Image 1 (cartoon, helix red, strand yellow):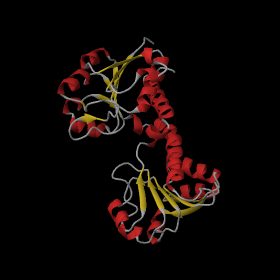
Image 2 (cartoon, rainbow, N blue to C red):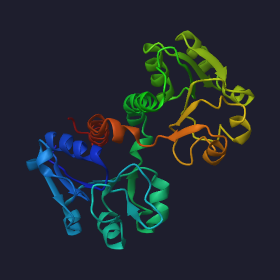
Image 3 (cartoon, rainbow, N blue to C red):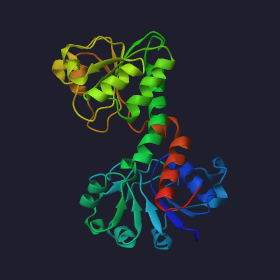
Length: 292
């Protein structure tokens, strides 16, 4: 396949590694929104074109946006850029007929109506991406727990809320560290699998009856720990919420009850940017029917 020109428009450190992986695969990589990045830090600096000249977007075959949704001001997440990175009308007109990879497709189309008919792949929602991304997410969650829990994970009573992709990996990793792991789920099949893998299984609805755990990891993207449930939760517990905003915890109520809570978002990008970036690149390349 002829070498593609791929534009990465915004993103954090993981997209530097994503760009590097795409370059190694033979793609021409244009990176917008990275003017605070020191190219000397990157082993593939000569293969990446760092620019904020948006006219160069015309050369791109496809465009990659960060997984976070564009904000109300039309800005794309770009923590490595000195100024806000706007996906304005001019840029939208340039990229609307290109292949676009972005998170929260419906949010993007709502905020940028010029892209309403564009070919957008919501890559974070792809099963391949979600499965691969579960590993750095789970490891990141454990890292947050180690940094903020005053005890040891060995022997700690841990609750993992939800037995999806992240919940499965997280429960297994915690067990390997000899934590006492309880996992909540709704489906009978998941409850059976939880038991089969040696964890204690409870129905998610039972959480409202009381939670006597040292560390609680929530992966469920709906409100689980409301004020009523928090009042029945161990006040010394550490709650780490991995769910996307607004999360599964009433943080205001938790503060009022002096329960330590952490909304740990975008963990792969913070704790394992290289692995996370390579996962994004693999997903994009597979979508484009190319190989690393």
